[in-house]
Image (cartoon, rainbow, N blue to C red; front, side, top):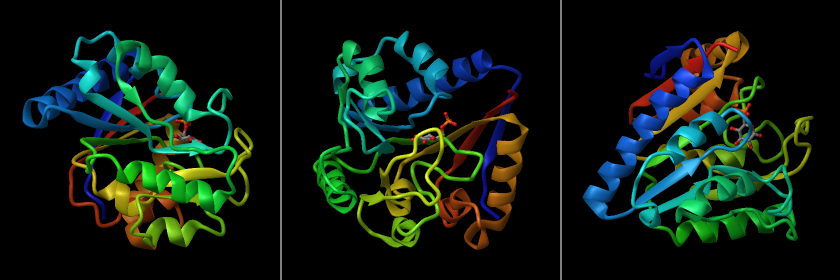
Length: 232
Ligand SMILES: O=C1O[C@H](COP(=O)(O)O)[C@@H](O)[C@H](O)[C@H]1O
């Protein structure tokens, strides 16, 4: 059984208010302790209300580096690009937003390039914030030919082709590996709706034996995990 603390909300606004405050605390503590902060943030649609609240807070954003925890192998100008979403939100504040996807490379090379970029950063991240799909994927750790490597590799990132390809973004990916995720100083997960709640509860219960990728990823986590869930 993976230990985690659940925080439940009735709507997206309440979740966003609380989580933006928590992330603000992480940013301030990191800057106080190390004069810089490294955040690994998710893409997709659900983080957007939290980004809005976070952007409204005053920090020395120039000391904050933000990388996507996964990205789709598309051009950074493509609406599917997680780096695009992060850049639109946080570059205007002065934060450093570092893309990890290389659309012009094959999957393996793109993974190697992402790993090199992440290895240039001062590791570990102060926060890895994860989303989750209804199929239990987190970051871009999906079932498919690269699943075992994502779970066992000591690299920070790899390239991965989901099988089946997810209909909302049917493209190959780069993703942080399980070991990179578990190296974070803190881990936060955001999900919405009853279906994702059921999947995540089951995955946490099953851990290493889970069919759900997020169960395999979080098995062995030693840091506290906060799960923020809201109704849909
Ligand atoms: O493909 C992805 O989906 C997950 C979940 O997105 P959500 O909008 O359903 O929360 C996301 O965490 C990941 O970064 C993204 O690439």
